[in-house]
Image 1 (cartoon, rainbow, N blue to C red):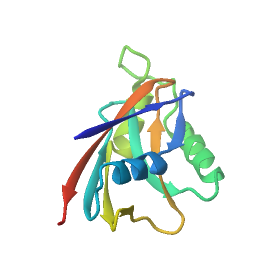
Image 2: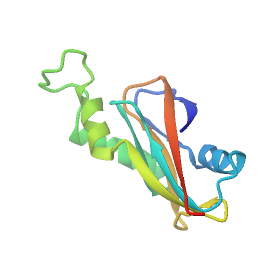
Image 3: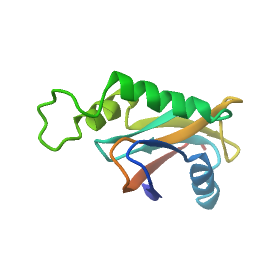
Image 4: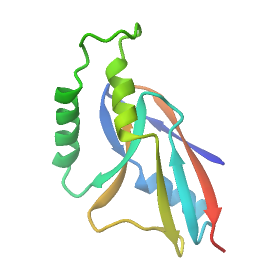
Length: 132
């Protein structure tokens, strides 16, 4: 398992991470296989969505905030129940296909670290399974 770090700067934000992941694929000489990307945090997630238009990320966060407001009648005492719910909805892992040393994504897709309780210094765990 390999670990990469990410700094977030807002309470809620989507940070594009495909360049960090592509660098790891290149640095570790991973050619053909499956890359599992896992976030070991209960208030963050990983998502794949459109990355061409930055308004998609803004719309995503805006809609999530309206559906799951920061303050509601939550029982969790730490005051970040919304962040735990958002993490569960977005999930904490994604499985990526790597062919010829390249992460395979659709034309408009990007990979985002989803911060729901920042700003923080976070970890992303990478597990490689080789096809060769």
